[in-house]
Image (cartoon, rainbow, N blue to C red):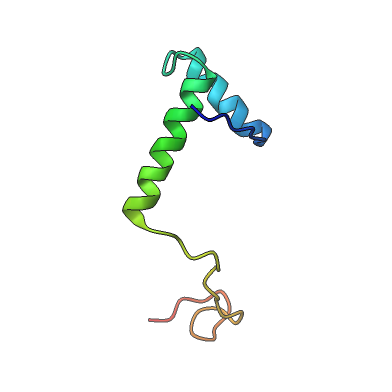
Length: 70
């Protein structure tokens, strides 16, 4: 099996360690492999997501700042 070196943010490492401690996975390697595979399956199912955020107008709802218009 090919080896991959990966640098991840601290909060993800903590979440993986917690899953291993809770018994969800045998070890870190299994956790990372299974979670990566699940992510790829989800990506294939939903397709690529647009990287651009939708643009919103700056002048509130229907041109009225902080007001509900019925």
